[in-house]
Image (cartoon, rainbow, N blue to C red; front, side):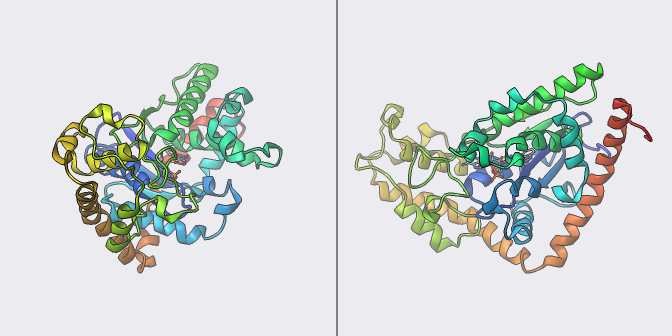
Length: 339
Ligand code: AMP
Ligand code: TRP
């Protein structure tokens, strides 16, 4: 891609095709990309190689890949202005992952909390790919010499590792080969919580569908999920202090705030003394207005695989061009034969 927008910026981000795309994915990541695409060159990836690091996500990859592509487009990402593509279609991701892994001390990976959470007690049986997942993520970003990475809060540690790897590599070869990528973790929806438990992250893998608003949920389902969302028996908060130790209420107010651009203070002012039901009804209205539109558009796009596949094929060709050049330059820098 010729960098036609802001000369020195290249935005890269990705979502795993693991099904159940939810409001957290939208507000924490995808929605921010829609704003970024106007003034920046952007690459949005569907990271299927990451999805296969856990056994439960190895089924339905093809369908889930198209679903993420549809979600990107339905959310407002313009496939003409940006590159949308599938990670496994560009060989450079796996290749660079190996090259970077040779420059990544094991101690850095041992600190990754996501591996500890996902591997659980049985670390010895966890796949090597789950352990080296953050190196592949660094490869995704650095393959394109990306400068900015908009993600949710849960990816912060992985991004710090990507920065460390870029710096270590540059230092070793005494060349500013990779830009050191900046995390873009912005807004107040960077960590949306479960609708059933305000201390748990809203997640694709939560067995309870009631814990999240899916991007494919219909208006009726959204209304029901918000009605049933956990609250407590206290009245709507009258001030910030009354949000302490009320994670579920905080989360719902945060969602409302992100969707409407009203500050938490403005929301407290608007709803205090009112019944929780009134707040929940208005929250449902704003969610239905936005999310069910995305849902309808996604469903429409998903009936047209020829269109979706052509976007992904086209994106792959553009991504490959950048990737191949950077891999060639990198191999030459390392000093491999035949470059
Ligand atoms: P994943 O579903 O793990 O591929 O995540 C895709 C993007 O959504 C990443 O940028 C995540 O940081 C973001 N994300 C996932 N869950 C949440 C959440 N509960 N709140 C905010 N952002 C999230
Ligand atoms: N690990 C990210 C997640 O689970 C997905 C991801 C893979 C990613 N490669 C990336 C995000 C590169 C940003 C940039 O959400």
